[in-house]
Amino acid sequence: MDELDREILNILRRDARTPYTEIAEEVGTSEGTVRNRVERMTEDDVIERFTVATRTGNVKAMIEIGVAMDVETTQISERMADWTEVDFVWQVSGEEDVVLVVDCADTQGVNDLITQAREMEEVVSTKTRLILDERLG
Image (cartoon, rainbow, N blue to C red; front, top):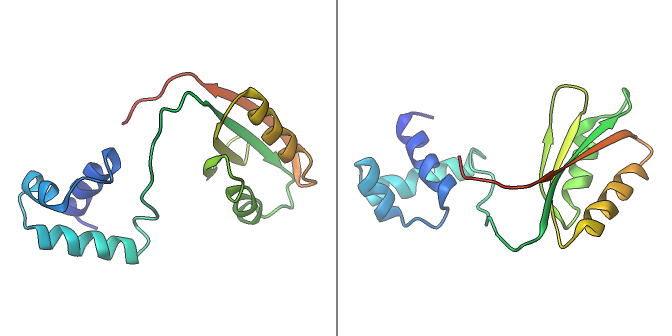
């Protein structure tokens, strides 16, 4: 990955629907070059997915999860990633092992996810933080 790839990614992070022609103009290259680089980064799993950020009025939260020492965090993360309300699953260092970023219709939905996590035998602790505001970085 070079500087041009990083510039393209920065534009796509802010708006994944930005036309390749607009990206090309902004970074000073051709539309074909942008298209080829995006395709390559997608094939190489540098770009994992294109997604939509919403402002639905829903309750967003981070659920921090501690798991038992003998648990493979990748396996539990993959299972939690399948939960409908989960936007992101991060494996992290620190006191907790996994962080879920969730988008639920209401606080009861957040609480249901916490309960679902706690019911897993591998989970030893949870900590939840409601997201009050967010900005694109």
